[in-house]
Length: 435
Ligand code: ATP
Ligand code: MG
Image 1 (cartoon, rainbow, N blue to C red):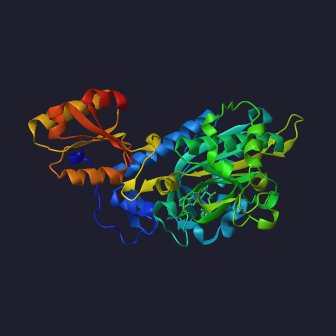
Image 2 (cartoon, rainbow, N blue to C red):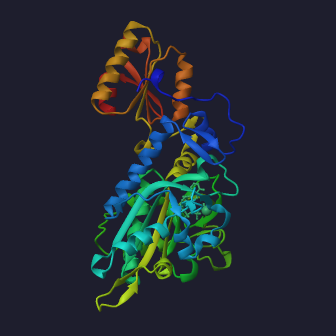
């Protein structure tokens, strides 16, 4: 992509409404624009990142055997009246009346819809387990939308729902999601810490919030420092195998949010405990037969008896992750994208646009990167070098390549990892390093 053609309305001034780094940087880099309170438009740079995150989430969901579906954003009120949640959900639910005076709502979550699909389609234990996911927009009329996309009203979520014949099978499904979440967040360069959360009426230990550490996080967290050195991607995981040992090994380490942390009962003494702040990026939850009972989603078991299906639901805040990753990875100059989700891998800067030799080297370099399938933003504008460097730092691409007249004469280009040191090497070696 040529910078002169790329729609990236950057801001020089720090927007006054933004209180935290990710919000400031996303606005300054032209990734998003606020359309209404807590409602954002995603511009090309931001949308590229959102799609990269979505793709990692999708790949990791598929790896567990979950299947992707797409449910409507607008839902009928009747289904929520059936489950008993229509009144309970309160003001966070955006309620709509259609031209026939029928009650609709913009979905804040999709348990009712998916339970309805299930009860109309599945009859027998032989068709279980099932696990269905979607990646789609939700609307919650948050009382205080803030921090940009981190607490929006409209936001992008991966949500999935597991269906099992009994609690033991439901635990297997839960464990798959637990392990899959560790992998998903680790692939984005994050250190996810699962924290036991309230599991509502059912009790038990099958509800976890996945928190990533960041100073600006909304929750205070306490954990065993060993969490910070764990690497979920180093594990060899077989999703058809028994994952309980892996889950046990991870949950053995102490971790709690402030509402659960009790210094008197904490197994680690205060000097050994890591304490910090964190952002909730995911939540997994086993709720048993809550919806299947109220909505009549039953299957026949191996004795021919009708039983309500055991369910769990699992969410990942896909759009929140864009902000959370920036909170976890930035410096004074701007964003530092992990390569796996960066909007472009390489930022190529022509430091003397219009100079025949510089133009020629840049054009060739750009064509070669394109031919090798390396996503590149090529800044060929007639702008000062300082402006180009500052912008590349702001938007945080993992690699920067600068081509100037001095280097061109010497047969070199300057290559730098975002946040790292500059190196002068030949264009060919630079190309080899990037492809
Ligand atoms: P929170 O406590 O932050 O409001 P929640 O418990 O309401 O979260 P869930 O219903 O479990 O969230 O939703 C799943 C995921 O969706 C959350 O872990 C979070 O990452 C994301 N999410 C929830 N609310 C928002 C929001 N208003 N804006 C952006 N992402 C959100
Ligand atoms: Mg909430």
